[in-house]
Length: 280
Image (cartoon, rainbow, N blue to C red; front, side, top):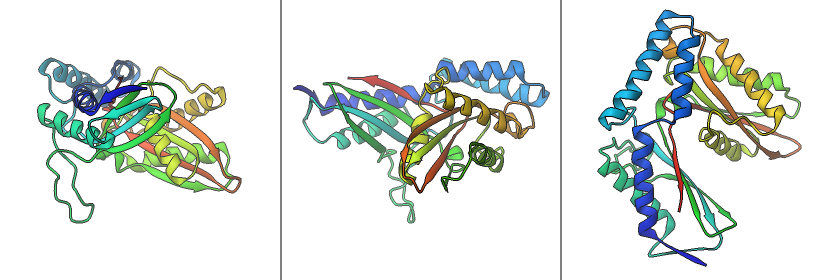
C-alpha cells in the first residue's frame, strides 16, 4: 500500500490547472498551422494566422491562451493500492483548483447554484470523474472547459435501427447549428453507447485524446474520418468566416449498450481544447 498525502494532490492539480490554461498541446497547435496551409478562404487563413499568433503571445507572456479559463473537469484514475492521507480526495482536488486559479490569475467562472448564480470566487467545485484502477499511482487529467463550446454540445437517444449515416448526420447537424459560436475550428468528442450519462462523459473524455491518436478500432477510425469530412462540408470555416476547415478533428469513444438503445453525445470543443495530465 502506497500513501499519498492530500497536499501532494492539491499541489499537482493546481499546477495542472495553470499549465492547461496557458497553452494548448502541440498536437492542436500543429493542426491549426496545418489548417492554415490547407485553407482556400483568405478570411479564414487570416483568422487561423491570428489564432497561431495568439498561441505564441500567450506562451511568451505566460498568460491564458483564452479569456474563458473554463469550468474544471478532472478525470482521475486512482490505483486501488493507494491510501490517501490527510483528508478527502475530492476536497484535495477542489483545493488544488482554487489554488491554481488564484496563483495563476485565472478567471473564476463557476457559480454555486445554477439558478441563483452567485460566483464561488475560486472556480470550484470541479466536475470530478474517478475510476479505481490497478496499481499504486494516481493519474490526473485536468480539462478546463469553456462554455462557448460546451453550450453547443448535444445528445440524442437513437434507436438501434439508426445507421452510421444517421449518426454522421447528427454530428454534422450539431456543428451546423453551432456555427461560429464555439470559435471554430472545432474539435469534437463523440460518445457512442452506454447510457445517456455514459455517452456524455465519453464525449467529454474523448477531447483529452491527442489529435495524433486515431481510434484503435479501424471501424471507428473510419467513422471519425467520415464525421470530420461531413462537418467540414458545412463550409462554416474558421471563426465562421466561411471556409474549408470547420473542425480539426473528431474523436470517438464507445461502450457496450442496451439492446433497445443507441445513445450518442457530441461534446464540442473550440480550437482552445486544453488539458494537462500527470501521474503521481
